[in-house]
Length: 134
Image (cartoon, rainbow, N blue to C red):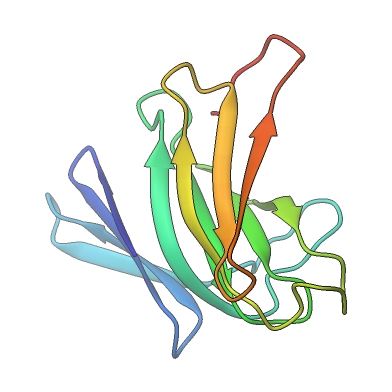
């Protein structure tokens, strides 16, 4: 997956499980292992796959899907480089070894969509607290 914001290109490598951050203005780059600085519960225990940025002008969050693992899910990296789990399958449960796919947000950003590829399941997560996903 690839995301672009403000002269910076973000992309992931499944093989090396790394996020690459290219500064196109300075022609420099950095890289980090996905999930290297974890906050709260959860883990990024498999390969990063799709990534998108949402409302990057305000928060610069990057959202990741995960290919495989015992509890694949959707994870977030904030602009400080901290990783969070947004949602994931139950460890060892129905979606173990599956792939989370298809990150999308509703136009008002109060709904978030993703799926589990092998199971053929589409999920909708709705915020009822008045806030938006950002």
